[in-house]
Length: 225
Image (cartoon, rainbow, N blue to C red; front, side, top):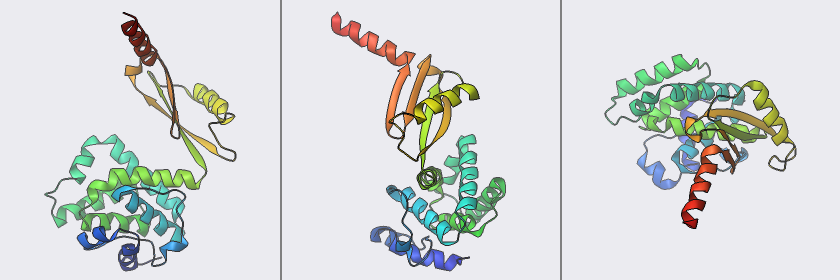
């Protein structure tokens, strides 16, 4: 297990110099971060932290439990909209941040030291507000590492498993999914689309919603009149 001190010291090689100067302590996997190549390049400070966490997890052979812990944290953030506001509060004292980290660890059922150290480092760097972005981008890294292609199906009402399975089977055979890749399907509900579906596969979007068709019809009528 890598020590917390080693993790903190070595991120200076992974973070842009201007960021390293502004932060008193940083996070990383190990001194030789170049030996671990993330499956995709991420940008932004949250992307830097997510990449460092991924590297740390690979270095400590704890990628699966780390992914599970981060997924639990992502679920907490999604279920409680107020949490992001609390994490980003500029008035948090050191005691407040320590209490928040302890509560996050408890609520998410985190066992390993990698994620615990990561949360503590975010707190010490006054970067707890980045957590929502970090967990999202870490999820992107995990999906890429597992050869997954994310497909988000937005519908006016929730879809049953049978319908989602049929959509997954159809799309899996299409050119939208590369060879050897597997789909990770998520159903989102948005009543505003009225009916139909909006299917997002990677960076592609197939808009089959009623609202989209109505918008096109309105545009056609306006252009004609």
